Image 1: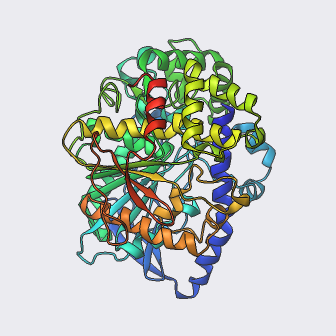
Image 2 (image 1 turned 180 degrees about the vertical axis):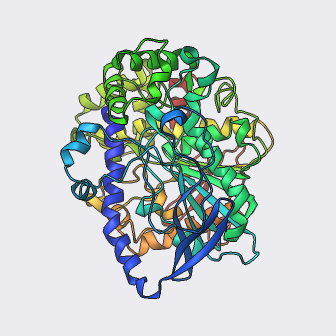
Length: 542
């Protein structure tokens, strides 16, 4: 749990640090700003044009999830008359522990502390587009935000879509949806058929947003038949889950998973156990599920945080995250094989070399040999010794801390990502493209190397906005030029090849070609083969 909170804190910090430079970029173009209108199926909206990009923020795609809509699949919002402003980001889903928000004080102090507005009326999305109503059919790129299934929003400065839209002549969409206890509490076994989908309503929100894209994006210059879903960390896990959801089939046509491996989800038995613990914390009987719809948000959030702590719930695999409920999600996305629901959809996925440096405790950067071995033994058990030997041979000169980060990062991210590539390719349908991000950021004296989240600003062409994460220097700018073009090419054609990169073959289990992103990017077959093999053995995948 501490690691999960540290990771969320790192992501929040990176976003907040980027905000200052992002604000400068926006203010620099303010003199050229003008209002722009767009039609949607629900009513007319007003956005702004900044340096040629039309921006619409906080656009409703679903009704408020409060009251009788709580724990229910999303509903359409009410149509409006006249023009609705879409000038500011909408509310994020409830996600902050009530005591933390109260301690921050007034709404102004809350904002100054970096805590965005939170509300159950959070089903909103944001659009960046080169043109409105021009009849063009541009690729659409829909971003699923990170933060596990517990935190985050589509309002981060690092994922502002203007640069990507301008560079690629594409339409960029980011979305907010229900999270944690409100988005992923499985009440089907306690509340009956009425609550059968409650364990997956946060994912059904995303499906609903994709339905909005299908029905409205042509008015924003986008092509509803060329939609890419992409996301990092928890966002990548959402992409993987969407690949296994029948309701999402046909609403997207390419998928990108960045450092977010969702091989398995929560089983119903475990999800029901967590739901019972929540009710107990709220002093409700199991026949009082409907009363959850009337309780104050703060009370439910307090109980949720208490359950997470008391049960030590890993919200990736054990609760308050998507449930294999047999309907919305019929099976695990990639276990024991890849889901065939959207098997024809081209998939690009990858990880970074030292994911765990972003969320590590300070002691992890100065481990002794014994300290490193203790940590690896906790992860890999009887396989720890052989793994350390293999990684040390493959990385001569690595310190004890270096070895810990490499092994832990492969255990949490790169190993599962490579297994997803293998299982998806085994379906023999849509192509799979695998990458491995080795570029090292110069910030913090270079100690972070290639941390979790590092690929986001490169994909969005926002390395200047995210200078506190990337350094924003010429090397970062040069790599962003290549990476973002690869993402755009994939969104346009389902193939990431671009003249700016070496030829990138589709993945196959025999050769395992992988694009290794660095200052000099190369394609390598199975670039960390020995490490991969020992990791697969440790995970019982060999």
